Length: 208
Length: 208
Image (tube, rainbow over all chains, first blue to last red; front, side, top):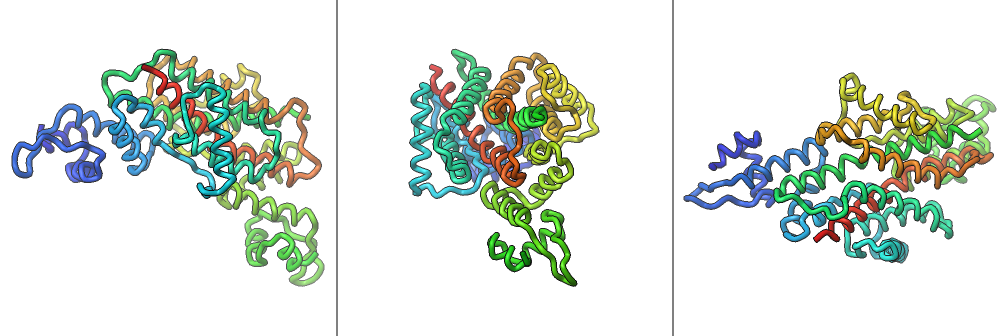
């Protein structure tokens, strides 16, 4: 289809499509002439995915681009690559060369390894966890934190087991799988945090 | 002590202290003369708490003020009131008068009640959870979501049980308890989200 038809069907204005093409969020169409290209159903799916991530999850275009590029660059594990690329650390910046940060990375990676998680210190999620742990340890410099940290790993495992069932494989439709994985990851985050606060409120309120 | 001594000991400039006084973040001192007031150790503690929440947790002054006012207004459960006032919903805004939102509030409150949580639809954390649930249901309009949601309540319960031990009571020092509760709530949030992503990455990567 021509770009005008793509625009109409995806309900995305042509200038926005051209912007996505320039930024690499949308792969180019097959060239059919000077200034003309042919777009496929895959382009339409991709455009709808970008719209969903922007409007439903409120992700920045920068984050969307990073997730989609990561998925494109890793055909075999495109969903995994996209989730890891979400990278949404919202705490205070941490110096990646500091001893505290490097020690936190080792600490998180070691617990993951002990639990048999298939992640390493190269994963963005592990780095994000280490950044957060750095900030925690700066404010609460207790040493015997094994028990508190363990509950967090347990909770994360519980959630992942429920959301990625044994034997899960991405659907045949990459856009559908990406939508499910990225939106699912992002939309459930505020839900989890609010419930944790509710559980805290409940327990502190119940004390004498 | 005089405001100048308070400023020196808390390492907070006098104009900032005056701003906090005007905004109600810091209670006024005992008047000792025209334009003179006497400040106590409690003022110093409060100032140090504000600095910690701003610098360590990166909270906005607006959020800090809301938490401290909530704590001040509820002497008996000041920690609970402060946690509930954190209110950090980061998703897309939700119309509080919509049927979808009201239904989500009832749904969350009902599950909390069934689990014996001491919270209600009036709590900010329950409202935040309902807002997040609204956004989830808009994107994933499945009906049989009991199982997925249950894992989130389980995870929240697990964390709260670890962080608020049975028989917990706030310390004698209100500033210490508030610092622990507010900072602990906020600093562990990015840690939890990053670990959840790591667990997802691990599980999706392990599929064939």
